[in-house]
Image (cartoon, rainbow, N blue to C red; front, side, top):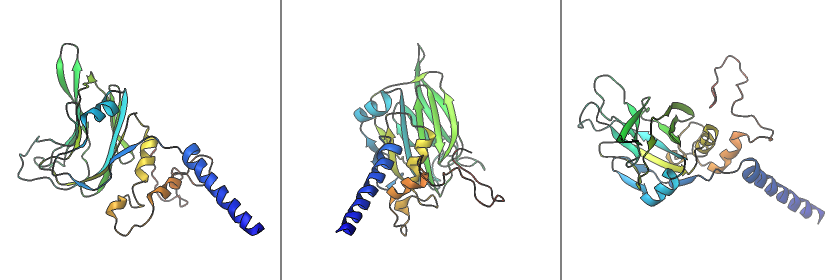
Amino acid sequence: MPRIALIIFGIVLLLITVYIVVYVIYPGSNNNDILDKMTPLNVKKVILTSDITKNKLLSNNGSTVMGFFYLLNGDKTTKVGNDFKSIIEIENNWYLEIAPAPSGTNKISARLRVSTSGQGTGINQEIIELPPIPQQKWMFIAILRDGRRFDVIYNNEIVASQILENYPVVISSSLSIGNTGLNGSVIHVIINDKRLTPTQIERERVTHVNTNNMVLEADSINISLPGLKLFGQCPPGLPCDPITKPPTNNLLQWKSPYS
């Protein structure tokens, strides 16, 4: 009987510990995964209706949209040059665009185009230039908005941060992914009605990838549970190594989301 009581006590203690880690030390950030299945990018698809998009992403002072993208070579029959196509967009607000068939020897180019409205100037198109988005590999792209400021993250690196001259327009528009002439896939488009921090973005990213930074759904031999990656981030107060700890071999170069 004492042994059974000890086992029950151990189970209760484990459940309490998990609860404290998940809901107290490491609480969720109210993220909503609105595209949890692999979806091709060669067709434009609405994934969030205009009324929800306006309430969740446009009406507040800040918002976050992020997702995993796997880009392949674009349609070579499309117009060569500055023929930008959006891979994800809020129509009439902002567009994350790439050029599937860039001219010359240039790599694929990318930009964030934002529709803004100034006093007496009507609707303007302000451009945030972005580094080329790597192809044939999974890239986690996050777009963070805080008023007139936009930040863009590739995986765990901020690649652009810019304050626009005017405020983005607020028109009831839907959130969509894909476009004719694109080739690739997207999964786990996640939204939040607040501007998340880069640390929160990284915490979300690692719950969907394996140790090779491959999306779990795209790795047929990976049977690990995404939820277990919670402990890979070493919540404060727990006896584990943080992700910023350098390797034991000081001859190796190390990188972290904050370096």
